[in-house]
Image (cartoon, rainbow, N blue to C red; front, top):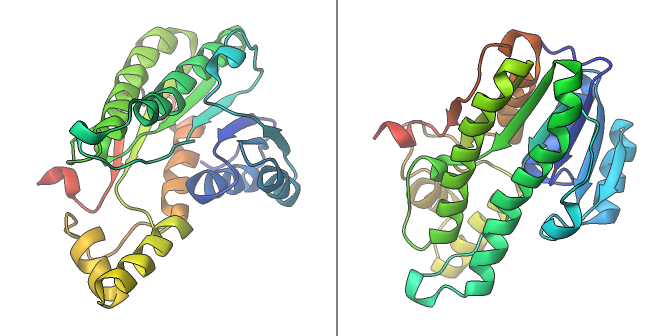
Length: 248
């Protein structure tokens, strides 16, 4: 299930968090992984650690990327950011940045990898969406819109690419215990004068039926499965890992 020997994989946002965990998982399975990230030093460090390649790239500059020809077997669109504002106060510049990075860039990269995948008759595209690709939360309009759009791109790509032996699927995590989330838990505990356990229970597990956050390695395991041969007929699907958030 986990054999990616001889495969080349591109993981965006691969220098940290979920992207780093996925890059490590793919490398352990035998793939040559291209770690794409705006942080050149961190991308190189991860690439060196896993025996892969680093690609320092600003994925928000989609005009520069359009027309690129990428020769990989697996594409993981993971790079993302978050901005939180009410719609009435949401800066247009931030809205555009989020949707460019998290929807337009995956489109441009998908466009870049499909020709070679079609030639080989094999390919895997995995989009890191979110629970917010399936439902909404207040004050996250740009993020929710981008992730809903990414789900639409996932399904359309699946329909177009499936006859060529290329699948496209999405992973939809809730909160994951990345270094970023750990920092947010500590910050909120300090700001609100409560314990980190209370922040975890009240904020980050408030929507979950399971009293535990997913780990980056949990998400990476799903990505590894979707990249392998046993997922050949899984196409256009959303794989939730949210403790039951979307079940409510």
